Image (tube, rainbow, N blue to C red; front, side, top):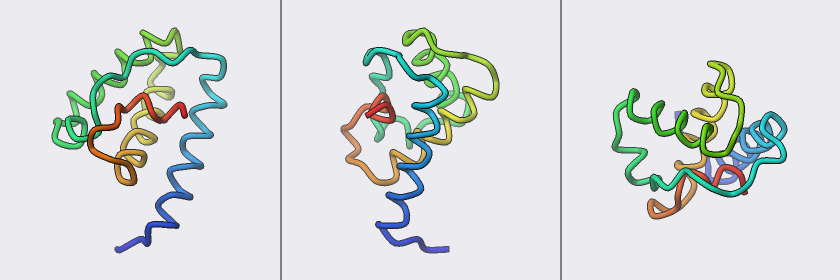
Length: 91
């Protein structure tokens, strides 16, 4: 299924807002893996990177929080440059 760029942006924005509400108040550190690296990584490596980013940010590292952040990073990396870090999901 093809999704136009505007719809992908809307979906990614909604996911980013969901993460922001879940992890509100966190600083802007961690998540140095780029979207290019993230997109090429295995599912296990993506999950490890997200868990590390959440720990660095002092956020919730429950399975639910990891799942939301992982989905947000995947959507974010669909619409951004490959050189952007995955921490960009926090704006």
